[in-house]
Length: 61
Image 1 (cartoon, rainbow, N blue to C red):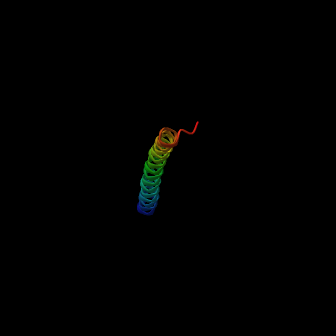
Image 2: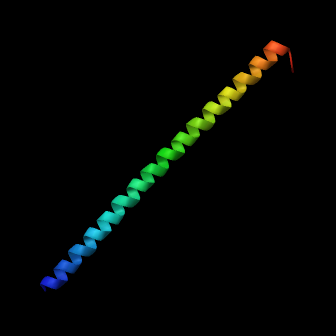
Image 3: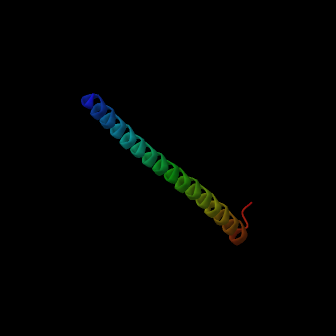
């Protein structure tokens, strides 16, 4: 009886640990994707600004 309970507890501990790790990695992936989205947005903004400056300065259509 006691062995059965110990085994259940160890399985539960392993499961909770793996769940914590997977949620942590999921949060990290979410953070990285947010950073990538912001970076893409900023780089596209800079590209548009650069094009506008070149068009204004040199009169290129």
